[in-house]
Image (cartoon, rainbow, N blue to C red):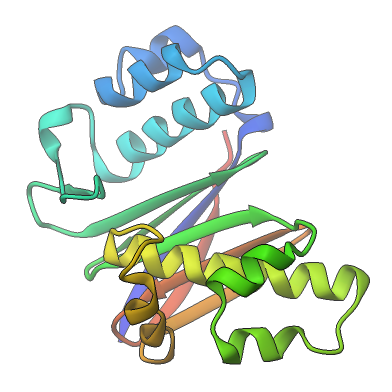
Length: 199
């Protein structure tokens, strides 16, 4: 069994000196921070870069390599990681096997997405649900799909229907934190250890 460490950071509580952090994190995250116009999105990039530095020692772009879809991997091959962010939170998953993670603030059920993306089993889970319960279940299923795609390092496309069957074979951990849903997916059986980052 693999042990996945999930670090959860609230960007509202991140009070480190911005310029000092920018000088210490991988340039790709510093560039994203500087190019991003929406302050909350920029803060997400800054915190992402900081978590990678703090937990994995990543300070240089050369420590990354990316697959054809842009999913980053450590060139050292020592472990695997995946990042996600939504509104006020950034989450980082670290484990010694391939991993995908997604965090989403609970959103209104989007029927067009259900029809286009969800498989039959996923659609059945929404039957009979209304209001907040339907929105929470929709968000849960959506994070499962996103985390699976991030595990594979692909996007929604022609191959999604083939990958969709992998939902059944992967180890999926989903939990709710206030009005956010977090899903972590690995191809191997895993347990979850959660750490809330505090400045």
